[in-house]
Length: 114
Image 1 (cartoon, helix red, strand yellow):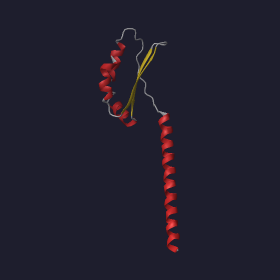
Image 2 (cartoon, rainbow, N blue to C red; image 1 turned 120 degrees about the vertical axis):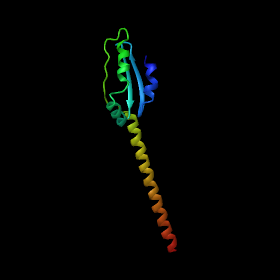
Image 3 (cartoon, rainbow, N blue to C red; image 1 turned 120 degrees about the horizontal axis):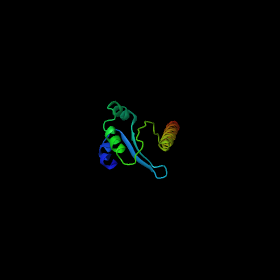
């Protein structure tokens, strides 16, 4: 059932990821669609376009007892850490470059004095 909707979901503006979670023990199934925040707001203003179609089909599945939606933020902290590390690396490289340039300027000053 979800496979039929994947092309539409994959074509959404700002799509970052699609995750399917299934728990055999508690019999839960979740589909998590992650969008960029600004694109989510647009989708929300459009009344979540095709979401109601998906929910109706899920409710029609024999044995399904509860179908619901939930909105929450989803932040990959690994990416944030990597971003911080990259920014720190870039900052250190820039400082190193500035020191090298100052050293070269001093060497040129000293060289012209002799």
